[in-house]
Length: 578
Image (cartoon, rainbow, N blue to C red; front, side, top):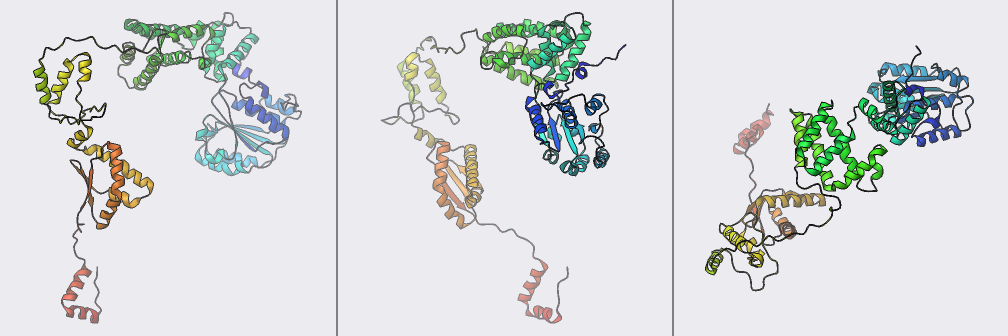
């Protein structure tokens, strides 16, 4: 039985032109070879399975190739290329930093760098997964990486650039590899299937490419599994691919969408039960539902339609169901789904957790509208005329006379209606109840107009609101650079009625407050919408805390009281001991 070689190795690119989706990098490297502008260190960054190590090997082979082509591709015929292809390369060394991450390994590499290559121009070191090196290994590598011998080149590769020390990054030319597009992966899989004489459905290959998440190596591994499952005699169908890739069929999600539109909660619960019986867990279902809702969202606009990454036969269904769902519903569903996923792992009853999400989404306020009705303004209809309350005019006058407010001025401003928020008298609800009984234009015309100035004078300032405004004012002074005024506003402040009292501990602060008062009143007036505010300063004496006398102070006091003590201390040269 011949040894099987997986497709990821069998169809590994051997030329720059074969590397998929990285033309911006391969073109730069070929130009560097053509013009002799090779750096001494390269760093290839990007996700897994996109060709970083493969590109490093091709570059290393091209550098030492004896008969490089005009396109700056390795010839694959010279002794250097042949030795590399036979897994016995000359002057090309590969190091896996994941298993050789100690400082001793790097020191050994540094020692090897000193030896001149026996054949070829360069010694090339390819270090894969370089982010796995320890900090000590990085530090031991710094000097050699910065100034290597003229015959040494380093090619580093990593999937996690943020873990590489900045001092390493600054010493390398950095190339960022992109994820490979789904269409490119599907086309490559189709080409390989034709070479292997394997029948396939394009929808199945597109599903494999979608599950690969931009990694060609992952796609080839999935392709090998599915091709083995079909025995290379049967066709690789979409159903077979979905079964092996643990892909929940689109039909489940379209049924869920239909149930959301009809607010059919029992059907939703039945669909979720069928998903669980098919062997999928709740998280798998939620993630797939999120992708489904996202696809419906991008289908709603022709501009975002290219973002739809589904097999071609499914696209008409997405267009149909996207027309049934409003933008508001899709956004609300995605937000609820995100919260459900965040709390899924911590839930003690995961099935109930998902079912509650489905019920809440289906039973919510009208978030799903029929196609063509979205954007139509809803006309507000006046409520039907209620039964008139049989109250006499005397009762109305009595209720009005019971109000504790003053009559409006002779020239009231139009539309001066006051919203009573917090401080409300006990008789105001009586008037509100009376107004509810009026109908039609009577309820609209019978509006008590109160002067805003009169109302503000009767309502005290709220300490919490004043504190918030003063905090903003202090921040304004701090940003302005007026530190003296800022320190003044940090003193204790008290609010009594409509008077704001600021504590002053020095007469200088009193003069400062007088200069600051105008600006502060304007700031408070704009923030609180109130001009009837008084600011005053309260000067308090600075209390000097009492402290015990020191021994030296006691001696000085006794010396002043009795001159003989001072004389004796001077003549005998006495000093205090501590």
